[in-house]
Length: 221
Image 1 (cartoon, helix red, strand yellow):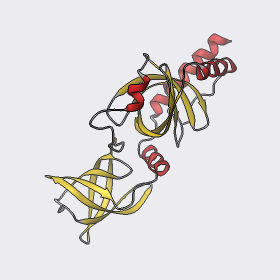
Image 2 (cartoon, helix red, strand yellow):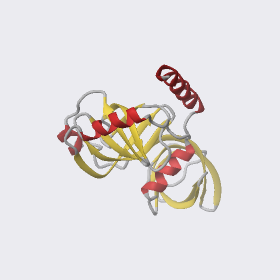
Image 3 (cartoon, one colour):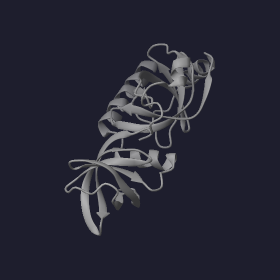
Image 4 (cartoon, helix red, strand yellow):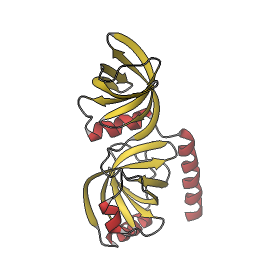
């Protein structure tokens, strides 16, 4: 579902908001966009004390209030104010410390973005096919819960809807939970689109947003 089309007045306000505040360029800073339907990968293009500009590789979420989560786990509540193709602009609920935001310090600052996303996957390990539940997912690998214990270091092929079987290996195991690392990481656009296809936006959210837009149209009439 595509995001709502903005009015001319909204676009004028958006342009003003985009110009306000000193922008600090953040090239290829990957983060998580958290909304009602799930978690989605995005790129933080730039940031100011009052807001940020994000890039998505798929349709924008229908709701306007969301959270941005950085790799270090820091959460920022925000409201979307404009959409322009793959890009969208947000206002933070409170001013942020830009230097702290750009530094992104903390234990998880250098970890790849990992999406909490449960979905059934198939795999072949040691010539034996199997099914597993994926618990989280990144461009570099995933955490799965399988019906059997697979030895650490075991090579396997794993597949899921929207992705052909990829070679990976088991890098850790706790009981029936396994951490797998892909031999070849997914390109960010492919990872983002795959995550979106596995957790499409909720119809309920779309219906709610449509009702809000209809109400706003009546008030403007």
